[in-house]
Length: 330
Image (cartoon, rainbow, N blue to C red):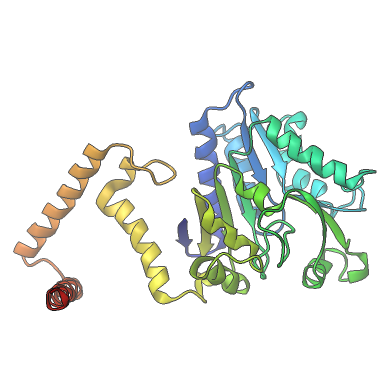
C-alpha cells in the first residue's frame, strides 16, 4: 500500500487530479477499449473534479473514451433533487468535461426493484471487464461509499441503511433537518471497490485522522471498512498533514522516506506512475550516482552538522546491531 502525504487539501487534490489524468492518458483509451473509472461524491473529490475539468478544457485530457461508475445514490429522492448524487456529479464534473452521456453509470435509487437494480449494476461493471481505477473518500468513521461500520468486507452492491452518525453528518445538505435526510441508499460493496485493478482513497482533515490511523497502523477490520485497502495489490491513499495527526511519527517518516527514495535515489524518471521500476539498469546507475555524490560530499566535508549526526547515528546503530547478532549466535 502506498501512502502519499501532501501539505493540505489543495495539494492533495492537485496530486489526485494529475494522477487520474496521467493514468487515463497512459492507458490510451479507445471506443473499443475504454478506461473504466469509479467515482465518489462528497467534499473529498471536489477540488480534484474542478482540476480535471480544467485539464479537459486545456486539451490535456479527454473523457470521450472514459466510462464511469458512481459509488452510491440515495433511495427515494428524484435525480433532479439538488442533493441527489446524480445532480452532484453533473454539477461538479460531468457538465464541465467531454464525456458522452451514455458512458456515465449511476445507481437508480427510485427503481421499482432495488435488489434487481443492484444486480444490474454489478453486471454492468462486469460487462466492461471491471473497473480500472476506483477513486474514493471516507467518512470520519472510516466508511467507504455507504459501507458503514460493520459492513461485510465481501459485500457487493446492495441496499444499505445509513448509520445515525451519517444521517446527522449529511443533514447539513438538507437544511440541517435530519428528517429530510434519506435513511436508505444504494451502494457498491467493499468487495466491489476492491475488485478494481487500482484503488485510490482521498483522506483529508483532522476529523478523519483516527480513521487513517486505523486503516494504516492496525489490522483489517469491518468496523473500519476502508482498512480493506490493506489487502489490495495496488492500494493508494493520498492524505494531507492534518489527517496524519493520529499516526505515529515513525509511520509518517517511513512513508515520506519511501517517497524520498523514489525521487532522490532512484529518480522519478525511472519509475512508472504506480511506483513500479521502468528499467533496472537505469535505477542501478541512478543509485550509484547518488552514492558517489554522497562520498564526494563526505570527502570534501560539505555535510552539515545535522547530516553528520544522522550518518553517524545510522553507523552506530548498524554496528550495535551487528554486535548483538554476533553475541547471540552459537
